Image (cartoon, rainbow, N blue to C red; front, side):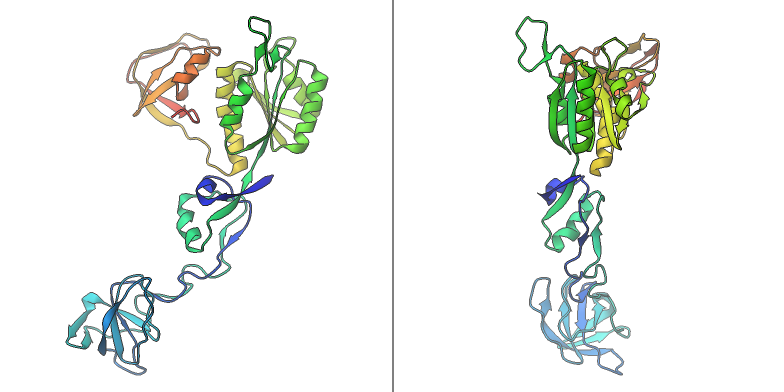
Length: 370
């Protein structure tokens, strides 16, 4: 799998391509864990009285030097002065003139974060394949790391069908490939290494699949997944690899399929745009998320804002418009291109159902629609 070096902000949600180690310990020096007074406790001393120096030890300031029996006020997170060996909390201290008195015996290393206590130099911060999360940022930035090498899955998209042309004549029998560019945009964690447009010749398709398996981490085909005499995509995949599953009993999803060729996953999308988008979200996005190290999309509960009927004999996928926990159903149909422009979620509706407003449904959000 290819990798690329990106700024930290672009690395979020993606998988690290390398082992990232700490360049220095954290903290680099002993620091105060509490507001109070830095002390240099004398050997074999009771640790109750200290000569108070003027000033305040603060983060980012030069470190003063303490002599035996001296103390200085210190802020949380500030580096301990040179020679200091403890911190006395403010509420446990009393000052009088140039003297500091401890209400209880000051103990060595009390309320001190020791150098390297959190991270030692060479500790592993990220492992190959680990997803980069926002909570990694403070540690990485503290180490001076502003760019990361992340995994970039390679995707090949193969559109099939004699009817597809790059520049079809208006009013003619051919159509423009409108699905491949859309899928390429939805595969945003990946690098689309190639988009191919083939006819219905199964030999050309088999050759293209073999070539894609040798140069890709994920293959996506478009078209040829139905049961017509020219729908040969599943058979072509089975001839050079295997079809893991083909269709589920849900309208729209029933024509999609997933397989593998020489260990490379392949997602087979129908040739209708709405069906292709939904099958991609259900199967393609999940596989790509695993490859890229990102988190797969999770479903969300919502309430219907309008009545919804599903007259079909099987469970069916519907598009929705989502707003603050409520969803409005869109018109149903795999060829209704315009509905995608107004939808931002989808969900499965039980067969032959009549759902009243307020009914809870489970939806997933369309990538890039919100």
